[in-house]
Length: 489
Image (cartoon, rainbow, N blue to C red; front, side, top):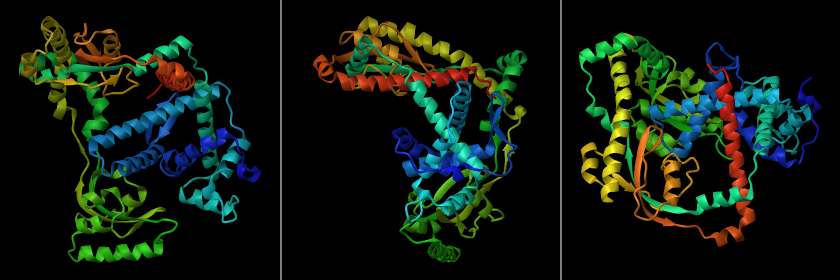
């Protein structure tokens, strides 16, 4: 017997209400379990397999949301980066769920039932949970009832674990005061970022050097090739599409109205009309601004309805109108790119040159930053522009920024900001600071100390904010530790 049969009335629990949004988002397109071929494996976490079918569903949803937010089609490198982000988030989710089971945490049937009952899109006109709507939803999203309810249980367990771990963090009063000082102090720095890539042109690799290096490092080249095979060398079948999309909304035109409209547009296009102009006029997709151009995309990453709809359609051809649960689409195939593999022999020399340069340029960058740039800057107190010009580098002022990065990838390293907080205006900071392989050299232009009366007046609010930040950091560190000890393949 499923949980549905045991469902009781919903709960007003604040915890359950907080989880509602998470669960709805998750199951309308993020982490469902689907039917179909489950042979492909994206990752294995302590023996548990994350399947390609699950991954692709999450990826397609994230891609759609990202393009809706940016109002453009993501480039191929951006799609690859997003793909890896999705993979890592699914791995993190799995290690957390496994740890929750080890800790003995559980989610009861009644909690799952209450969560189902709180999903308002499953309620009928009478405001009550509708078994008929639930059955239609499961069919539309390709779930079994057991799979869907098991995933609700996992979501609730994940959120419960996150809440438990976060509340384990604490802060003393002096620590909170110090965090306020870090957050409220502002510094304006003149910073030079010395990137190793600036020295790559200075490295030349002769044929003999490459041959000698390869004789000792063939295995490294093979390892690099294998590691980057899917990302760089295994080029899947791709297709370049142009699309006009019309959304199905509760208070707007329905499927029976939209399909004839797209069929009429299809007739115009096949009669010679400019599809790009029609897309700009009619399409409700973010790609409309680009004339419906979706760019090149791997066929495997297209929505199932689209990949089926364009099957057999030649280049230049317009597919029959494609319908999904939320929209109707008119798609033209602009280009097809056959799958291709770059063999190890094809790219061996390129990989070798890249690895040789990667070995040499960090030391060159560090030596330049320490023994030339910093030394001359400290000696004169002025930016040594001649050194920067020779390497194509620039000094840029940050403007007033806080002295705590809060994981800002564009901020200088935390160690540099800590030094700036203790420095005097005009002082060249005493060290070279490194972050992510980039070397930072800088000078404090100006510092603005915090107003401690603000701290005293708003101490309670500051304490709450600081504790929330610490709990978030504590949880992320805990998850990272779980991943570091997990067997991930």
